[in-house]
Image (cartoon, rainbow, N blue to C red):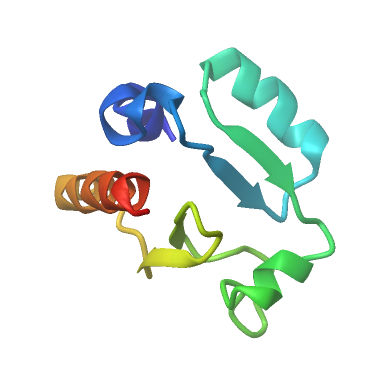
Length: 108
């Protein structure tokens, strides 16, 4: 999450025309104080029932935690790019994400 915060302006156009949602199976009370303390510029969403995780196939069978998967959604509401799994420790992943976000933002 630090990399998202630190590269937010570059990857997510400083939030102009971009909404970033981080969805987790953790309770919203867990996210709220942590996100505030660290200054993350994204919206955290809690999916304790894991419905979203199942719908987007990011909850492996027999596991309680979601996989790190990123979906870039275009202006038309359709998924424009998927990074499965997202390798958060590899800079190339952020470069790919930045390009996907820029392309989705430019699409009609």
